[in-house]
Length: 377
Image (cartoon, rainbow, N blue to C red):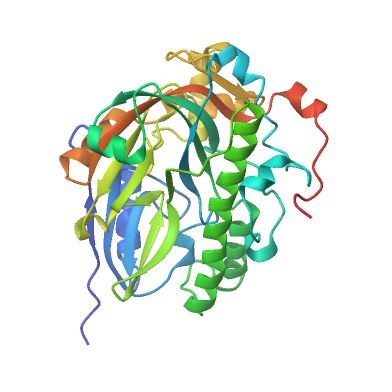
């Protein structure tokens, strides 16, 4: 009896890119799973818990742990019209996005329809970790044709929202792992039905977050011009394409997120089968959270991290999170985007720079707001 062949592994990164050997090892471990055919590592590849982050993995078998608990996590971009964008004035106007909006919050009007899975818990909240809501400015248009198609011009303001399905995705993964651990889904159709609800929930959550911020800043909520998920499973060509920290790259517009103190890049993605039709979703960590905390405290002050080199402000009442999410904890976004271009996976469209980035509410703001009661009635 012939032994099953190990899947191929390709990492789309240049010789000068920072790729940890642990992340590459994880790619090969995934490639050895039964049914796996090809693993594509993006230039933001880094180690994750049990599976690499920044990877797209094709298999004839569906593995829920390769997607993880934050099913439906993604990044959306919303146009916003403000007369002036002074960071110091706007930072204090951001709502408390750690708390759910109340049932009478006007932001609900921007997201009509049923809540997927009937899951109201944490709807309209951003979450922790690398999630954020950012008011940013288009600093440079890099491809006029694509920018015009998206309705963007230099100087325009946008809201960038990075969040996912919060507790819903975690509940879905836990239901699987408590029975089957890291094994394949026993009933792929049943898992996919729950998974698809979490993906829709994540998109709805990003719209609600953007509406809350737009209204608080005195602007009208708008529909997203970009909304791409980077934690999901796609049924494609008879197999399962798992993406963990990798955005859909088959003719999509994708915001490749930088850090709180560096640009982000909107790209037109055109990745083919060698890259599993995927592109990077951000700069990618180069330090663990523990390392970033130790090194950051030795190198930076809290105030240095709250006012960035590009002149923006960071709203974050959690000092530990400030250090864990410091720009120095991440890879150079220019290198990541450069690798996408060099490998023919994407065309840069526009460069955005932060004005105000929300991570978590300041302590005073938390005390001043009462908790919402379960969102929409």
